[in-house]
Image 1 (cartoon, rainbow, N blue to C red):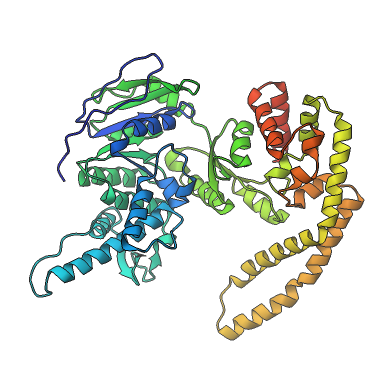
Image 2: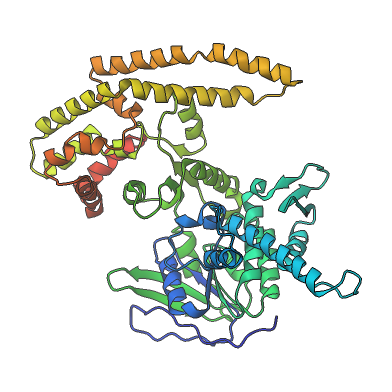
Length: 527
């Protein structure tokens, strides 16, 4: 494709009222800034202002779950996916990730091209078939990973590595490999003359792979304009001929930014380098949807020294934390995670904590808001009798837990059996008979009824000893805040009002907020 004539980019409003212009013929632009400076919002505002040509990409949301994206502008690939499916009357069983949708589109397009070729040309016509999107993806994949081969099996992409005869599906690719195939496939679908907004182009990628990938994609689509938002100044320096936008600060009240344009012929200064690299915070992956969940509202205010990213499920948090820490040598950023304790036993909790996954001393995040010290701070700030509030809340929780005790014991038993079976069945067997005998023995060995009775005894002991903290550790009950009557006792009309008040206390950033922050951090065995 030939380079397109492009219109000048429209930039978000400047804090000082400055008018910012760049020539319309630039092919690349780099957006940099420290954490919290507002560069992601800046990019979203820029994409919205230039929406006619915007084509945003993010490997993080594509690999895990694009429904969690909170980047401020529509997902163009999802729009293309829905259109491609509805055009063919096959809008069912939608893959949950952006990468899954891309691969589905590639297979649909490949089938369409093959059928079209069969209808238009006889097999012996001698007319060469046009290259498809899938051909492009496979060709670039082999250029970037020459030791890895791609082929089709049962209508799906499969992969093999050098000296390995076993094929595996795309789901088993490493996060870096998934990012590569996502970006290549996405660029085959970018509209002509698109402004391609790439969030963290370095994410999951080794530097040598990263530079080779983006060099090839820029050559593949010279008609597109690439706008990269990155922390990686080495990557920024590798994009020769690209001006740099340094986002210094953001005023959310007025939606104005303080930023500076560094021309392509100027190098990134030491001031910019120190502002970005020196300000980088460790990453904290959490559960929740990033918008409405208590996790996403509470944890950024409690763990202020971290860049907090919501990923949805606990499995995604665990995988993302592991991946980031495995790649620490390349991005020099520490990564941690937080998952609910749920019904995990101490060995599971200790294992996760050893992998930098923080697990609270309560069953789930709602229980954090039911900690005695949290309730005491809220009640005191509302002018309530703290001892009276705590006494009534504790009694309500004891009563509620007593009525749900057997159900909770059964849930804990189920979790224990499931985890034990997973560990014990994951072994090698010489025959199906050996596997059958092993499983038959497991039922007797695990003894679910004994586990259940032990849980019941343990939970009854908590009630006899009025051990409120232990009950919060084992009791999964999302309605606890409402049914405990803590909402009314503290003078609120709803659970949302109670939660919002705690969030507002943390935002105030005074002595009360700091005390509340310490109480919640202690729940993670942190000071």
